[in-house]
Image (tube, rainbow, N blue to C red; front, side):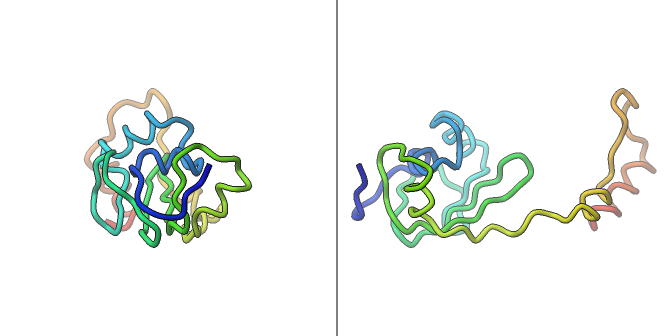
Length: 124
């Protein structure tokens, strides 16, 4: 079920350790540029090996994991946790989440002033 040597496709590994629900979602994330291995954008077929750092941006949250074990097939949640070291930043606090700009649905396009205010909130 698991092999500790060699390499495996990055989309397959992300799916195997349950960072995405399906392999096709993992491949789509790679194609969209949401997956980085050792700070380089990768295609779905890029090889990943033990010791590599994988960054996955999903739903506005970035997961940073270091590969400790190569698996080729999807494994259970208990085994999946043993396959990587999670170095992800902590989620934002409730106070920080409130500070993020929010527009009412159906309010139309933001004006130039609204865009500037949103950029100020984001720190750009």
